[in-house]
Image (cartoon, rainbow, N blue to C red; front, side):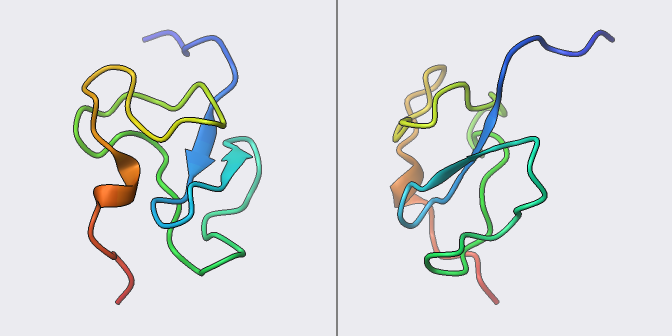
Length: 69
């Protein structure tokens, strides 16, 4: 399987802050929430740092329940 071309992002489901997926940041520095690597609904990777909804399935990221334990 070939790697997908392009730039991808991690997005915080609480505040929608985005960082390039190439960084080591896994938790949001604003609120401690674990950042999403892909859409939990369909698995699509995030190609825009401004995304609030998945471009493939339409899931709204800020509607995802708090995942902190």
